[in-house]
Amino acid sequence: MSVVEPVSLAVLASPGEYDADIAAGDGQPLGIPLSYGGPYLGILACRESLVRQIPGRLVGMTTDVDGKRAFVMTLRAREQDIRREKAASNICTNQALCALAATIYVGAMGPHGLRDVAALGAARAAELEAALAAAGAPRLHPGPYLNEFAVRVPNAAAVHSRLLGRGILAGLPLARAIPDDPALADALLVCATEMTTADEIAAFAAALGEELAGGAR
Image 1 (cartoon, one colour):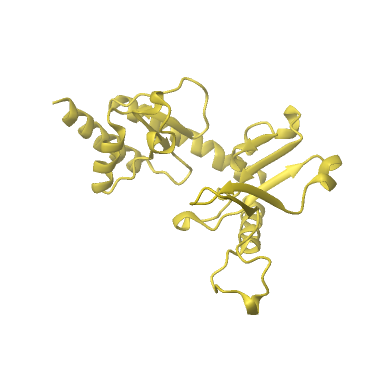
Image 2: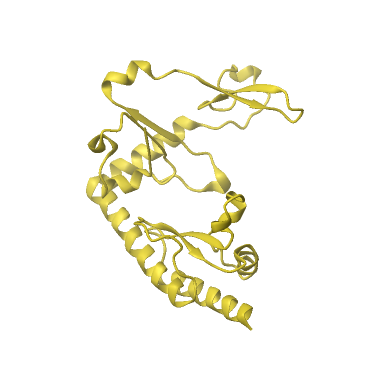
């Protein structure tokens, strides 16, 4: 089983090349706007020999607010099993529309275009890493990355909040997402894509440097 970022596959080995039987990913990078958190589409692929073993429906088990066991359909659109005239909501996630948009994006970009997108995102991320390191926020982990990495920022959540007040979205304070890992208490997860500009990188690094210098005084 492999979980992949689809654009990265334009420059990295495909799951099949390292013998993964199943690959899953999020299709949002394939031309789908962020849109305040959705809707998006998922990607699921497997070897031809396993196609007929992929379930048509997946049911997850959880607990409700009262601690009672509950079941929920996963990988399903809202009200997918309700006839349109009987639906209680007139706002439903159109996954087919997202899949069509992603297909058009991939078709329009082609393999060379996707390679350019991945390579440019990686180049912008390298520029971002250098700028943030110069501002006093070095990379947290030494391993390789494509266009997303974590930097060390003392009191990261407070710095993130102040930068947001200045009109700069400084990534994600990882302590909010993974509160039980003390190594991430002072970490910001940042990212650059092919859409990130040099001016945006410079503005982010300058503002972060000012915040860090102010905190040192």
